[in-house]
Length: 281
Figure 1 (spheres, rainbow, N blue to C red):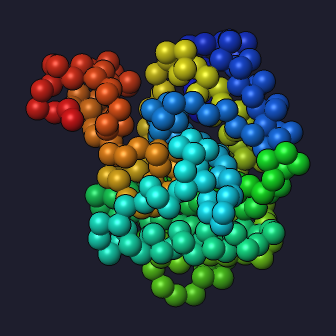
Figure 2: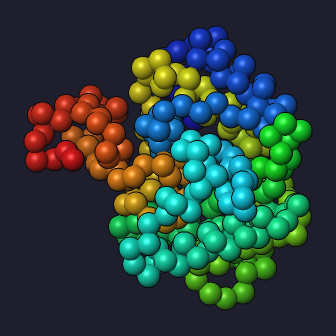
């Protein structure tokens, strides 16, 4: 049976982290506002959600025709690597999304990332739509969902949305109006659909980040995350987008650790960098 991160850590449902998360979530429901934490916490929270098959919810803001990350306070496109033809294709796909979102008042875009050796360890679907808030203005709301699909599964799902031809990662699917993400996912993953329908995925993430800020380790689930090595796709549509060097694997447990952050102890198993001089970066 699936356990919430709070329960995985052995904490009761009335713990301080839960109260902090509920307070943040209640405000978020009214204002579409999230609580943002240091970069390493945001990265590990997203990874934990993916490996536990929990949707990853977050927003972007608009300014001067660009999508901005509230974590790094700069345009998302500035963080995208363009080292090869695949990353260049993903960058151009993001530019299409940004241009579309900038001129639209409503609608939804669905970006599908199939598995790709060395880049994406699991398939991932990003559902994004345009929302408004009285104080924050126009916002781009995102949910990243890992489903364990193979290439054919991704293609079949894309065709139900009107996709006809081309490489999925290079061709986001644009819809004129927003539709229920929970309804779309129900036939494929009823549990994740239920989390979205009840907004429980938002609460789980807020609770998890609050716990991590108090020193608790993010639980790693039984599933693969989508991140792989740093690519344009996982930089753009994940809370790990702000990490300038991506991540490296812990030499003991193979858990992902953000690079370039000065982290010397694995947040998953406690392994120390000095004990593995050849295995850490």
